[in-house]
Length: 316
Image (cartoon, rainbow, N blue to C red; front, side, top):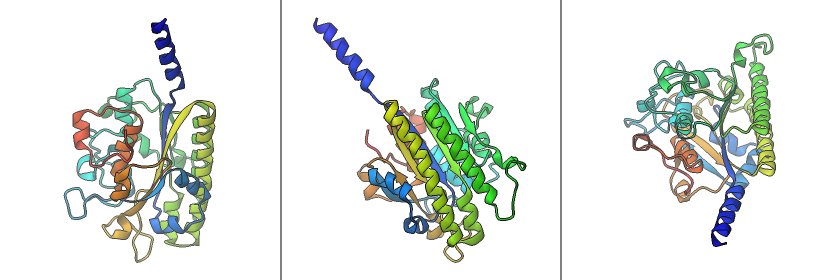
């Protein structure tokens, strides 16, 4: 009888355990100052549950890890938990990524090969080059769900001079991501959105950038509605992290790539309360990899763990 009771208790505990899922979003090129002053009810709903954290990109200024404050460089610092001196991506050409520093997708799939990953992106190279979908160098890592490459479709998304087509692509990416999350709920997903960066390059700190951030906020709401649907109906627990890849120069508010404070200063939004490290230290984009690993119970090899430049923002 005692043995039966123990078995029943274990079964109840197993059944009640929540399935953990992660969604991270990179919203390109938004200075912290511009997000902080924006009207952003979607972001605020997440912040109220977790935190808004000052963050930085670009590695140690003047040190061996100093990295260009350029988009693909920042994406790969998040994906690998390392700076450019290790991951090898130094510009948007993405010529020679060092796949010996695996992405969070690779280490997740290595440990949980039957679980699913998703990439939803306004830029095809994020999946094909950075994540390395199907490449021999990543041992033919397979992305289970992806929606990208729309920037190559000049019929559905006619390339207008004001780049509004990028907003339309972002809308498509968000709609597809929300649909896949509701329907299939990949265990680890990346959503990448570009329009804010385009408006920053064109207009700097401006009403146009403010409008783009407002549009982004509505897109974040759509993604969070999909997450809420899964949590309500499927006994799932979701970690959501939203960040950006760089700031902008202080002079014009348009450019980036250098090591000024304005270009290095970014932000991070997370939907659960971080640990003491997050509040006692300035967070970095490389902290996101170990944070996801903690949440998803990924056991990192010594080689991967020793190479990481960041620390987890969540306690085990």
